[in-house]
Image (cartoon, rainbow, N blue to C red; front, side):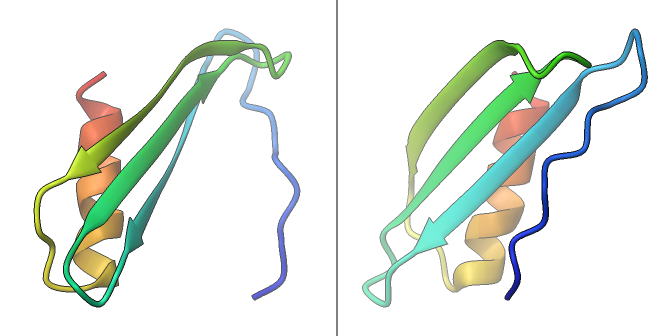
Length: 69
């Protein structure tokens, strides 16, 4: 899929981007980054996820992990 450029949030807001990865053995991971309207990193993290059934579950777990920051 084509890469889309990062779009800054409105002033006074922050933006969370997350990504999940999944291997066919079920091993999964998540990465999250929180930035302000200037693109400055407020927080970033990566985490090993427990076994996921598929890539969609890994992506959803990454979203949930990011929202729990």
